[in-house]
Image 1 (cartoon, helix red, strand yellow):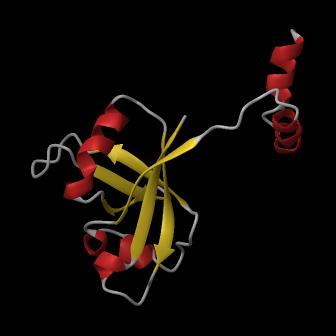
Image 2: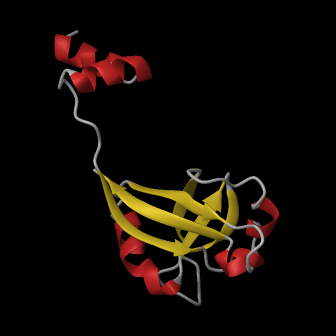
Length: 130
């Protein structure tokens, strides 16, 4: 095994990745902020029932909804494999296209407000990892 490949292999482990990035062996992945919004349809799916579990920094999964008859660019949002809503129609076109291109997007919870109206309970942000 070559030295560089070995170093990249051990860099997968948290302790070694800190050392490897400090030595300049690997570069940390950059994050590019794309958007932030409240989850659309939160009250119609499992969002309200899961709000007590949700906390700032939790990851969410974005999935193109190819069968959606109401919005060609619909993007589902899932929390722990449970549907919690959609990316709002006003913000979904570019995310839909990026997901279709299989770009590495990261969605996480920015704010949780359990006592607000359902539309404002959960605010998220989306970043491109590259």
